[in-house]
Image (cartoon, rainbow, N blue to C red; front, side, top):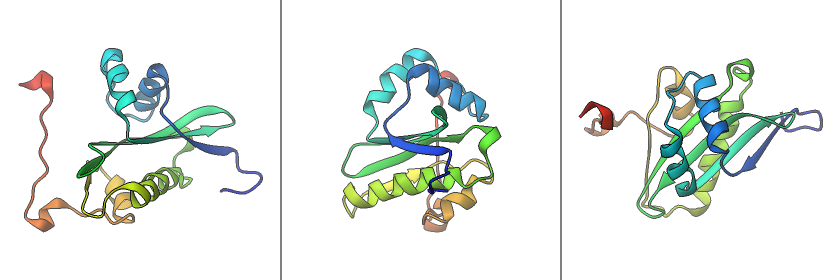
Length: 143
């Protein structure tokens, strides 16, 4: 899919607040408040935007402290473009950047929703329960 006739183009960066929100909701992920997104996007350690004929249809980001802890977030592809290996392309770009710049002792995590775990396993991610760990979360509006 990286050939001359490839209608998809990936570039480094993060989308605008509006595009970020649209990409998430189009892909079935939860929406986030504009104010929260505006705070979050500049703190991206590394991000990619996937476009189809110039229109953003996917994205992925890495957040973290830049040294010891990183988290892969916001992986999404518009449903009309799913099933074409595009999530794999996004993950490949993110993991290549981690391998290039993150310290060898860094901890990289992500939350795998549904069958996405099979994609992430291809990039070396494993269920934390295998290591006597359990992933936990807290939503601020549920405290």
